[in-house]
Length: 184
Image (cartoon, rainbow, N blue to C red; front, side):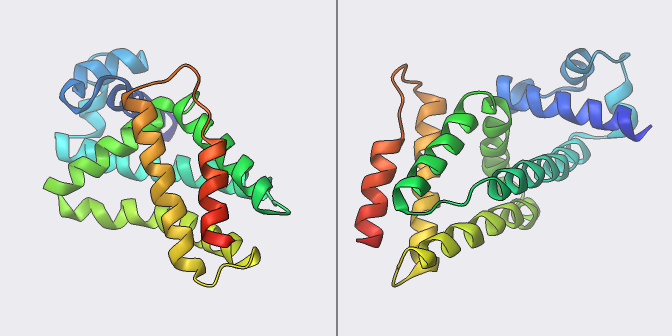
C-alpha cells in the first residue's frame, strides 16, 4: 500500500515539475503513475492533501539525495567546492530537472499557503548548514552569511537554467568567482 502511494507521489512530482501546477490533476497523476483512474484521489481526497503529500515526499527524496551528495563530497579547497556545487547545479537542471522545477513550484505555492514554508525551509536548512561549514573551513569571516549567499546564487542560476536553458551551460566559472569574492 505504501509502495503504491509512493508511486503516485513520484508521478505527482514529475507532473508538477514537468507540466506545472495547473496540470497537476488526479487524472494526470494517475496516468503518469500508470495506475487505475481514481487511485490518486483514494490517497489524497483534495488538492490541498495532494500538495501536502508532494511537499513531504519531495523533502524526503531531496534529503536522501543531499545526504548522498554531501557524504561523497569533501572538497579540499574552494576550487573543488566550486566544482562540487557546479556538479550539483548540473544535476538539478539536467537529470533532476522535474524534481527541481517541482520544488520551485512549491515555493510559489507557499506564497498562497504559508503553512508549506516550514517543511520547505527544513530542507534548505540542511544545505545551509553544509554550505556554512564549507565556508568556515575555507576561511570565511562570516560563514553563515557567505553560505547563504552561495545558496541564493545557486538557486538563481538553477532557476534561470530551468527557465531559459542554455546549451553551453557551465555554472563552474561563476561559482569559482563568487567563492573567490566571498573567501578571498
